[in-house]
Length: 71
Image (cartoon, rainbow, N blue to C red):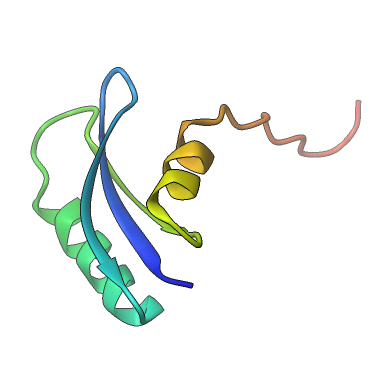
């Protein structure tokens, strides 16, 4: 399965940038884009999925808040 790299701009607008077969190549692109980004609120994400539609669905789904310990 390929690795998809997306640019995410408010309000959760996904822009596909590139597709990679190797994780290291995708990670390098994401890290370089994050360092070069000067606009607030813009993020770059890497997702492992079988097709672009699945990748966008995974990135669009709200994530549960992390629970760090019990009260």
